[in-house]
Image 1 (spheres, one colour):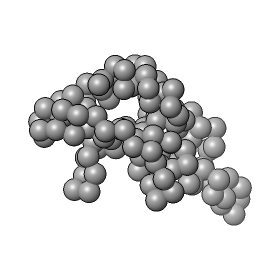
Image 2 (image 1 turned 90 degrees about the vertical axis):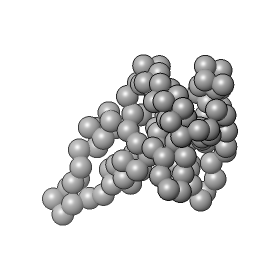
Image 3 (image 1 turned 90 degrees about the horizontal axis):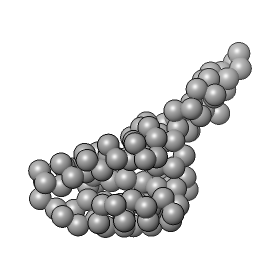
Length: 114
């Protein structure tokens, strides 16, 4: 199994909030098992987070206003959104991924899981 570190660009949904992406490459079952272990480690190390789709959806709607004021409770959304990391489960287009806010957070992950 191999970890591939990538820099996010403007074409990525994770950009500009997350600067680095780590993809898990390898045999499907082995890769998924290792990714799941790493996911648990991230929750313990960096705190709870949500998947990238939920993260970007909440981030994009937190400033959306309703006619009567803020439609969403911004304080609750800020508590849910972990600004250090999020994850993405494999799809037909992407591998299992983790996204990190900066080089320091990414390096800590790579040292543990490489």
